[in-house]
Image (cartoon, rainbow over all chains, first blue to last red; front, side, top):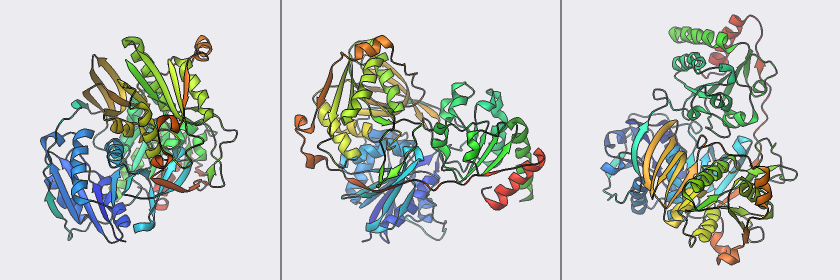
Amino acid sequence: MSKKVLVLGEAREGALRNVSYEAIAAAKQISSGGEVVSVLLGDSVGELATELGKYGADRVITVEHPHLKQYTSDGYGQALLAVIEQENPDAIVFGHTALGKDLSPKIASKLQIGLVSDVTSIEGEGDSAVFIRPIYSGKAFEKVKVKAGIEFITIRPNNIAPLAKDDSKSAVVSSLSVDITNLRTIIKEVVRKTTEGVDLSEAKVVIAGGRGVKSEEGFAPLKELADVLGGAVGASRGACDADYCDYSLQIGQTGKVVTPDLYIAAGISGAIQHLAGMSNSKIIVAINKDPEANIFKVADYGIVGDLFEVIPMLTEEFKKLKVNA
Amino acid sequence: MNIYVLVKRTFDTEEKIVVSGGKIQEDGAEFIINPYDEYAIEEAIQVRDAQGGEVTVLTMGGEDAEKQLRTALAMGADKAVLINIEDDVEEMDQFTAAHVISEYLKDKNPDLILAGNVAIDGGSGQVGPRVAESLGINYVTTITNLEINGTTVTIKRDVEGDTEVLETSLPLLVTAQQGLNEPRYPSLPGIMKAKKKPLEEVELDDLDIDEDDVVAKTETIEIYLPPKKEAGKVLEGELADQVKELVHLLHSEAKVV
């Protein structure tokens, strides 16, 4: 049976996040020839709607309201429930982002339905769709089916490939007016700590530092390499505990889970708790002075050496590669 | 202040995962309090110490979870509740858990409920917000700081690395992120006292819940281990050559840059 699938589009600093396109691809698969409807919420999001069509959305519904300028579960919840009521979808897809993680359980609870969180791949399509998700911090996987009711999933960024952009395609855009009232949370301030635009969970390249980085200043060469590769900087718990960096950079069992195309671990020993946060990365590079370090066991490529020598040399080589490309 | 903490018993982070007969093998494994829940317990104790009141730790599961509840009591919680579903629920999911916990809490008038932002086994992060929604109270996830002034609550939360500062009010459910506090270890006197603290055990019958009302909405049809990764290639030779080779491999072989 073909299905109608609702997808939440997510913008960050005025641009759509990649996961919005990945969610459309997931929705296409679940819809099995049905309809994919993207939803955009905000105070002014109309301009972003056309982009979603090029990535495969059949329709886009925008809900614009001053109270939707910043995300709150109450505001977004009210808007989305209004869209769900109007559209009556067979399935819903969110990104497993800070916003998606926060909002999806509220919607699932309100609708009294199941929710499959943090899906990394989908097998089959339509009624036979099965959702695969990591459990035990990626040490195992489970295949989950929704028994009855709306199929509601959140997808982990960087795992389901978006459809190729097709400029000739466009979506039918409509707007829905929703009264947003009674917000119980007021956002006072957002303190930006992350580096320019590249979000750790969505980054294609992550350069992570451990205790071997030795100081706050020690992260500078890592940052330089990340900038050259358009990546983000992360850290092990050891580096965070030693105050070399903010906990917001921590990758691991407690901390962020990342699955970039390239993960470079510099001065990280590779405790099992750290591996839980990055072992599903596509390619792992380990740089460590200790040839016995555990990180080499999960690495695709390793260099035994001092990160303060290796990282700047890598930066130079990648610069050359970029120039030649 | 009437404070509840939702706690889950999970595999020790160091445990190796073994799958047999389509299930994760639990025999002989070490179990702990879910690490994120430890932050929630610590914060609850600190709030109680500052504001007065009582901390109740609550878990759902089998008899074995009593051990984790006793640990929470030893840390400083006042009371514990075990919702024992061992004999009643065969297949459960987050809907089941949230429904059962909400039914228990609905007439307890909690001012503040704390939970971990995610459990390191199932990893869904749903149960806290679902419970709040069922109870009709507000929630804030992944918090790193909590200040309570009367009924006004000021919170810092982690949003993918950025910090959001927000204001809300009690009653409220919050989920703890790393960085919220440094959970204490149970002291020896704490462990002795914990043995005498009240631990209530209830079953679905006591909550007037029909087993059919909590049937899972989702179903796990298979559990498997990821393919074993082959040992990687440790480069050799002069460092400068190694670096050149690595860049070449990443570009031409792995094709990730």
